[in-house]
Each structure stands twice: as structure tokens, then as C-alpha cells.
Image 1 (spheres, rainbow, N blue to C red):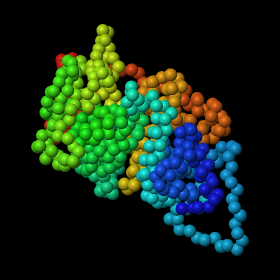
Image 2 (cartoon, one colour; image 1 turned 90 degrees about the vertical axis):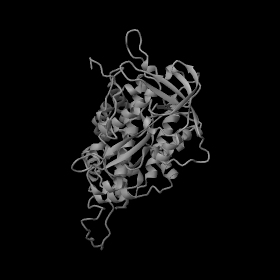
Image 3 (cartoon, rainbow, N blue to C red; image 1 turned 120 degrees about the vertical axis):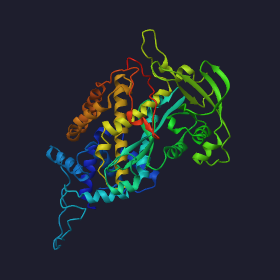
Length: 487
């Protein structure tokens, strides 16, 4: 890759100008802090880790272009605009013959031509620890600036869930991540992602990308090592595991999860109607079947609390938690979605049902932002690079949405993520060529105002069935919604 000073200055200017919409969030000081935390060197060439982060975000924005054309496109826009001039070229030394270069040389010929091989080589060497520390530092800064947004009462509210990411049809990806189980002609490569997020603002905190053969509970155990006291974790019932429950409780944190069928719970005390304390002791057969090795500190049983409810039109369900005191979190706060007022309108969703916000996050990340349809790489390192760029772009866009909602006095989840991406894409070229003072005083407030104009209509009690999840173990799942004559 090229290392001359002139081209380094040019590409640094390109990166700083193209990230103006996120300049207040993704600062050079933050990138340097991520470098120190991850224990890597930033580098002095144009493809250093800071520019590679910008390239990952730009690749997520410009999904139809390859990696090399993204930098060239930005440079062309700057060159066509007035008022931007790169540094003057250095004078050539006399008597030096021009060396003939290979067509595969990643350094390129001119200052605007960039070889894609250079990005491929730099991407393979880029450590994932730098991406993860960058996300962690951004999430920590958001919590420091907006502590109320991520808390419910005195708890820090978190949501945990996993999803599968469809990858392009390449043998290298199928070997690295595995393939799907369905498919008649050829099975598609798939990767598995498990994420911890703040559901009240839909902001990712930690995530892990792994092969499909790795179980979600194994990845969740690694993510839950970073829990803090008084964290309240909302989980899907697919994470029902005795060891995970004890891991959360040993961190002095709390969890809420849906009740599964066939779980032997022994009632010890009734706290009220459909609210009771139970004792759960997993059977020997389940431990043998799941190959759970008992650590020395793992107890034989756990005291839990079961809150049963039924939403009108749906089958009975229940929430299991280790928060045993009903004075801290009452039954009504857990299942408020089941309460209907006199006019027949469903009230505000309860605490556990905020877990569905992470399902919306996966939909916005994979479908609305287009992560699944835009993955280009053929190696595991390249896929990890692109996924990290999409997650970082999602976090930055959600941060802008929160600032727009706070400035205009709106709930952050009421603003449309799809329309926010469109407004951001419409103003990219204007931000790229505008004056810095005009950006700070006019364009960025105008962008936040336009983002705040697109509100998602309220649809209380709306049901979103997922037919793909019905089939499991050669049996069709029973639908959560009751079948009546009207339906």
C-alpha cells in the first residue's frame, strides 16, 4: 500500500469530510482511545485503522459500490466542488528512472485510483478487538451523556437475543460459518449473531458473530460476563438455561424470561393472583441431555417468581424472573400490555414486552439498512469487517435519531429509522461540500429537524406473526394468537 505523505494527507481529508454528519460522535480522540484500549497501533498509512473504520461505515452506506470505488467517489465529489485543493505534489528528483509497477500493485497509479487489493489486505489484518472497543466506548459515552435513556427506575435495562445472517453463496463462507438446514438444491451459508442492546433507545452495546454450529447460549454466556449490579436483562425463552440464570444472579443482576412448557416449578408461596414464588430444580435427565457440567458454585435449585397473564385474543403466557420482591417491580409493571381500559384500547406495553425492541433492531439492521443484501466478501474476515461497519452505522444513526427526538420533545422509538437513513443519504453530498460553519449552524440542525418529522404511527395491540418460526423438530408450533371465527 502507498505511504507517501501527500496521499496520506489527501485521504485523511477525505475521511474527515465524509464523516461530518457523525463528526460530533465518532471523534479522532475516541478512535485513539479505542486504539489504546485494544492494544494495537493506529498506523500512519492511508489504510490505517481509523480510515478502515470510515471505509466500513461508508461501505454500509453505499451498498451498491465496491470498497475501492467508495473512496474514489468521495474524492471525485470533493474535486468537482469549489474551495477544496489537495496539497501540492512533491517535485521529482532528477536522474531517477521511472520504475515499472505490476498491475497487481495495491498502491495504484494516480492519487485518485485505489486498488481493491489494498483494502482486502488491510481488512484481513484489522483486529476485531478494535471494532468492539470502538462500539463499547461509543455506548459508554452515550450512557454518560444520557443516563436516563438507558434506565428503567434504578435498573439499567438490557435485552438479549440472537439472529441468523444469510451470507453469499461461497464455499469459503460455508466452510467458515456453516450452512442452513433447509434448502433443496443448495444450502445457503449462514452466520449467527448474538447481541446485547439497550431496548429503550434501540442502541447496540455488545455483539458476537460466530459460526452457525455455535449455540446462542454459549455466546450469551460470554456476553453476560460483562453485566453489572442492578442490570435488568430481558431474554427470549430460547435462552432458558439454569447456568445462565445463575450467572446473571451471581453478578447481582436480574432477568426476565418467558415461561417454557414442561418446566417443573414447585410453588412455595403465593404473592397474589397469578403471581407466586417457585423453586426450580432441573432434572437429571435434562442435565445429561444438555451435557451441563456442574461447577462448584452452581446451586441445586433457584428461587424464582412466576407471573402468569393472558392478553385478550392470545393464549395464556407467563414471565419468570429472579426479582422476587413485588414492591420493587409489581405484577402490573411486568404485564401492563394485558390491561385494557374502558374504551377497549391496550395500554402502554409492560416491562418484559420491551424485549421485542431488539427484534425490531434486527429487522432494521438486516432489512431496512440492507446488511443481508449487501455483503460482498468471500472470507470470514471480510464478513466480520462488513458486519461491524453495519453495526457501527446503525449505532451512529440511532444516536442521531435520539438527538433529534430529544431536541423536538419526542419519544426516540416513534421516529422512523428508514426515513432517517433516507434523510441522511439525501444530505451526504451537501455535507461533503459545505463550509464547516454552515454545517454546524445550519445543516446539522436541519438534518435533525427533518429526521424528527417522520413519525411511526401508533398501533397498540398490533400482532406480527412469523410463519418461518412455526416449524421445529418436525412439528409445527402452536400459534400464540387464538383462532376464532372472525380470524
